[in-house]
Length: 241
Image 1 (cartoon, rainbow, N blue to C red):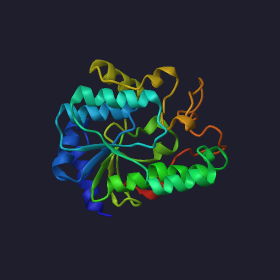
Image 2: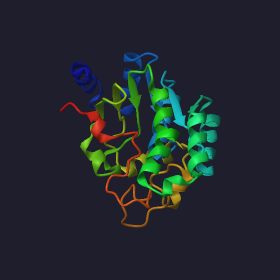
Image 3: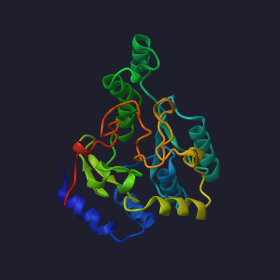
Image 4: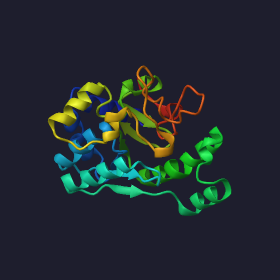
């Protein structure tokens, strides 16, 4: 871990608007900076900042094969609007075929281990390929999304993937995100209007009821306090204070 680099990034990005901070990072990590989108509210804001400012940051998504039709629609609409590519990373077909042939297409409902296996094949391994050879990973994480994400920081060292993580709208509220989308006429996933604050694979995501936690709709059949698939595991991240 390069503590000096993390402190340098904090000094150069603190107080800057997200677009300006992203532009500085793109210059600092030429051809080695990427942004992962799942086409949710937050990710659409960052995609707009990157594409509308023509920033040299590669935008990619994890195509798990189990996404909502609404997600595919906003994906296609975003490409049409900005005329920029969004690179798809698919699961390893051999590993996926082996899992489905052995356990069926919905084995993730049967146990936590099965669910983690599915996430590992459909999301974690493709993510590792997408991040390989890069030095900086941009995400749409916000502090108020879940309790454990409040213990993160907008600049972090991801030990598992051996790179810097930067969350440009980490301190934004949901109202700020929604207002930005409305003001800039950014396409967004209409599932958000139907009670889906967090949108992942269709079989693993449901609408959230009033008063429920932000991530209550993810893997709702599991009785656990931390509902993360491993993409942003807090225990793997070292934050410089």
